[in-house]
Image (cartoon, rainbow, N blue to C red; front, top):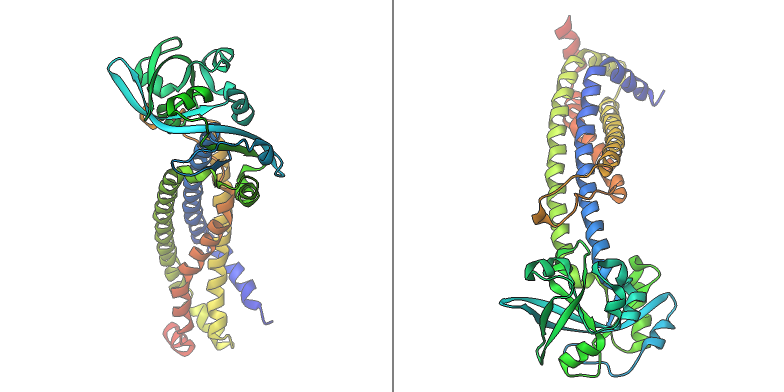
Length: 384
């Protein structure tokens, strides 16, 4: 008999089914919107991570600012467990000129065969012949940079470094879908880069590992193997990821306040229900029900509304994300995205469900406290 209020709470949910349905749908709609927005944020995050990794190694081993590596550490790096490929590179700021047009760029000089094993560069070529690129005498530009300069395959450009300048022919144009790389990166052969910088060394090594998501685990072994600084791929794009995280946080708070608005609406429903149930509550108090048990009647109903509404909202959001992922949502060219990406935010579903349950509970706290103060004698007197 100690848990009779569970039975009464369920009966009340069924008796006031219209109000119960409205409460569940209100929470469900807010949760659906929250999960869909989080899934768009997840999709954009995954999109940029995927596109950045097309031209960025999982980790870079660097000699340091204004320093070069003169020795070959490739064998030592490849002996680290989990390392799949390693390639030397020389990187420096420069300019690319075509007539009167000039664009500031980052010049990366690579060993083309080693870079192919590291990043599969040939698959990124939008235009050009990979066999021609392998000869190492020309330059490979990003698609957006080629558009800005108005150049194509076979056109001549001038690559300017802090030390020298060199006229070169465009052998290839690559496309990643990430504007930062497509508009600001130039790739040349390692020998050409060393000539431009007047050095025989390299800036460091790019490394590909078995699990890029666990790149941090490889930092210490690689430092021990090469004796140089090791940085994971995401550190070079921290500004982008911080910006996306800030935007995601703002969107979450906007939708959390939407949940609070839903809670206020549900609270009004339960206030009306509490007013209609004063006689029943008075009778229950007269029969020996404690204020705590009376409050439990409302808390159980709020908990049920939040749990069911949250579960339905997540299921509805899952269906919406599934449908949207199969649509091609075109964006203006200024966004530099072929389509608006979306990916299910699995990691957020549990805290979102918890937020739905909390919303249901917050909506009934005040009505529950009000009902604990009902005087059974006053109720019976007023009704009679």
